[in-house]
Image 1 (cartoon, rainbow, N blue to C red):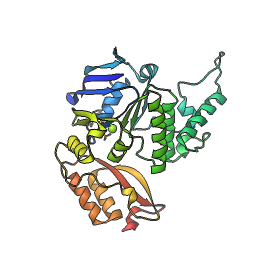
Image 2: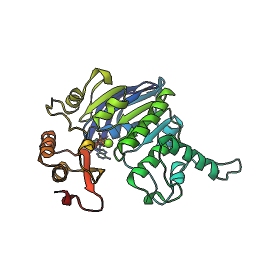
Image 3: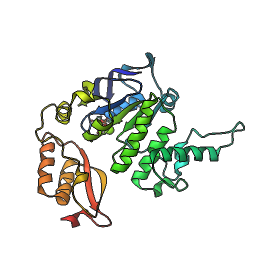
Image 4: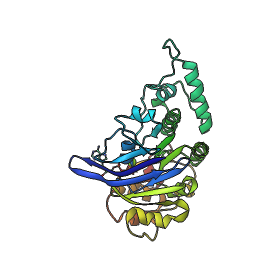
Length: 310
Ligand SMILES: Nc1ncnc2c1ncn2[C@@H]1O[C@H](COP(=O)(O)OP(=O)(O)OP(=O)(O)O)[C@@H](O)[C@H]1O
Ligand SMILES: [Mg+2]
């Protein structure tokens, strides 16, 4: 269905993708894994025409394709949930979902009711109730994430790329998203799923491709690997303690969680204050290799600074 071969990308004279291959079948959820900076988002931006590759080829159903912008890629059946939100803050959810793709009647007038009905149907599918009439800047980050996902779903894409869609979602919300992904998969949609949560890879993905430092490492069926093996493929050596267990299950009543992206030093400090020294040592072990950014969950007491957890 989708084949990327030998994809290279340089920014200036620095090459960040060194000949990456990715092959995704119809009706498959394919995990794209790698540490921060491995090149996952760059590869997906190349797939959807936002970035031009320095070398390599994209084939869809065997046909070589090159997109000069995202709109061309959408025309070819590609939809992307971007890691960085692509929403316009002062527009509402419906306007954002149909921005530049408004539904119009024969006279060119906007079909507001039709767009709203479609938006409501997608939100229902996602199992969320979101105010559709308010500017999205008034929505929570998780709600905005759902608008971002709904915007991609509204494209009825045959190839859907989800770049860290679960980063701001609760487990229940992730469950709804996975249901939608399973339903799309059963209709033959190819899904590329990017997440730093390895447990999610085992819940929803069929195959996985691992990148390391911009280079292709390997592709295999998820059933052929376990978490320690995936981590080994990602970092290039075995890590005995593996990734920390899902911190959502830590008993911390009264605390809400948010996802944040920190430099690791800041994250380790914050996580240590919220969770205690044991947690600190796990993160330290993970961070020993280099000082790249890590993603992980961090808790904040609602309405009060995290420092008060100490
Ligand atoms: N516009 C750009 N200009 C220069 N370098 C860039 C640009 N975009 C990405 N890079 C570099 O390319 C490399 C790959 O970045 P990319 O964002 O694709 O990684 P990623 O795997 O998506 O990481 P993350 O998990 O943090 O999202 C990084 O070293 C990054 O700094
Ligand atoms: Mg990324």
